[in-house]
Image (tube, rainbow, N blue to C red; front, side, top):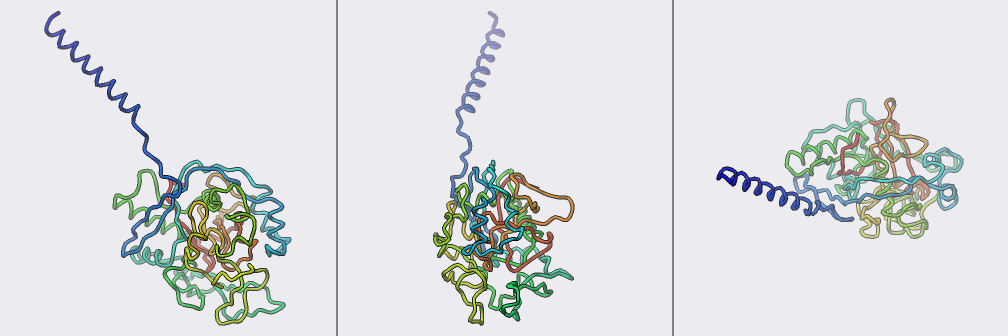
Length: 362
């Protein structure tokens, strides 16, 4: 064999060995590890402000409620108004749904301090603060009488997340309210841009509002279908959530009318985020998933029930809000409760939002 042929054979052998080694190495490489359920991370918003996220693994759950649950919600203990269409929004029966991608979710609703940091850096003006903007707030002149409906809310100009008309000083640890679907989306876009420019945003992910399916799955904390994230017994909710309870309204000797949780939760209006600590966190480690403030999600409202995939409409979108609020009776603060807001710019002193870090949607 000539010298040139020998060199050629040796080169081919070396190349073949290299390919074998490379293939073997790739085949044996461990895939990138996914975060464990309950893993946490803190995101730096600047100026000493952070936001904590909790990892939620893929899984399945049941969206909606049973006729028995609806009957409890509108019964004596649940206290919701019977004979309305409100409970029908939950669907006729629970439907099995799958959340196929894991995602990170805010441990709490976005707080006043976190939203303030966003506004300081971006110069953002919320919908309620824009010319002609209004927001729904508590009416301090509201009188509790036998004939007056128990809905002490008025739409006014000049109020916003900076002053929701609670009648007491706003604190950074409260959940931000009087914010719209548009405002929540703007916060998420700002955070996405900020983290991407800093090189801290994982590839293929973005900050956004959770989809309705993600929110409902996360709310249940790993349970398939119960009234509340801890189970079906309201009595087990003591010390876990902020709803209409035995607490005097500011400057008054009266509590919210109609049905109330039979204990004091410490607050007639909003409570600080994560105020109830470990007892107020569900199986995923998320705080305040029932009661507190309504949480605006990404989906548009379908009165027939929630969807597994993101649901958008082309005309007159009404964003979905979930979870109930501090004014709600127990039956209106369940995992399955859902309502549609008037518009993408509507805001209310009972509404806030929670962020998600996941694959892009919408």
